[in-house]
Image 1 (cartoon, rainbow, N blue to C red):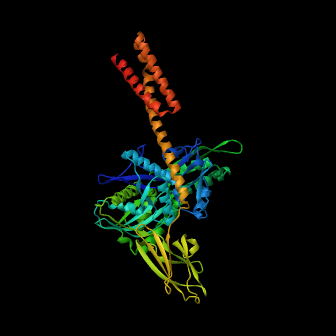
Image 2: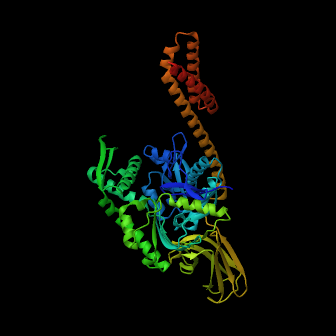
Image 3: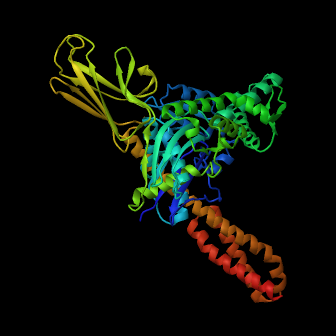
Length: 607
């Protein structure tokens, strides 16, 4: 049976899991780590780097290293979140051809789904290396509060990466799947998910027979650990400016060093009460004198810097409980998900609000990927009895006269669903109505996300308000939205299937898929060369270490001198093959190097 992998495409780190022999497992990457930084870079030579290797060179290549791309995926260029990212990121963000967002690396523009695809492709490679077979299907998680365009952009990223994304599921729901898997529990749980870039809270009812029903969900797709880091950076920049009248934000490398130090200090302060941030030679003054940054950050100061962010998450929790029509004492378990939940102040705030100690039984960095892996296995296994009932996180409706958003399907409605509403014309002798389909939570239509529009024309002429138009919204199990408008008197009808957009055309996606394939071939080939090179270099080092001893032992005989000359020639040929990066030649020389190493060890052992 074909394997389906589960991927948690995170803001800060990503993770891939699979169900093996009935148990979900996280797959470690080549370095043995279970999570991989969601970072992408392009080197001066034009080579793409993903994950740990991209993170390691971020400071020296700040302008061409992307982090937290997930916060931009599926967003429009004119959104306040994008403006915030443009002002604070060390890499260049520009407007794309469809009022979307593009990132410039080494003078080449990349769409955000393309950047995310590089991370997804890395997850695919990690899974394939582990399983020893190709992988083509995946379940990918997204924040529960993502809108349809952000979800579509994530699907497009999967397609570009060479993955058939058979299901997109919400991160808190995935965490609940992992928590409830194989436990036969019946509980109402709250999943508090505070990650690197986004915050979600979901209330779920877990049934004993594998039924997972989402009751309510809410969140903020621009609230996470990145914002806590930003508060520390502001504090450091402000202190440095007061002392030296220099704004460190004007230097991209300094900004990346600050980001790195802020993230490290934040993590350290979950375990200690105080930490030192020490950045020597952070910048040069106008007099060409090197300046250093050195400050003590206490846990108390960090809590003061981020108190309003933590309070915002608790306010969202309050609203979600109200939406679910539940009291705190009806929540039987609180599950903490996401790296930020390691912060003691957050654990304290959650415990204070829900009036119960949060569950410590899940791994905050791995639980979402494990849940995605469980969902992937369930989708292809007929014997797996698991029913997942999710909700639409945002209200769906239409724009009506006076920029009013008229809601048809409220937020937190279980899908699949359909709703109808009757509207009347707003002008005398009106012969057509434009149906503008929107998604969002504001009563002002233009503050919500436009999903699509169509015109119902040919309606009968009548006085204002006398023509009744019935509008029907339908969401199927896959989350596809269909909207129909009907003139009730004449039966005239027009409909649209709302296709969310990531801001990319089909032709652009196809070109990106082809580029990604070529890049993967290059990367796989260079990885193979690197592995062979390391093996050959290790053998060369062993042989060169044994040379003096072997020469001493065999120098007196002609046969011995000939063997030494041959060994030298083998080593020289191997070095030349390594310099040429010729994989076939390196592999060929490895055999000769192995024989030489065995012979040398044998000569030394006999003495």
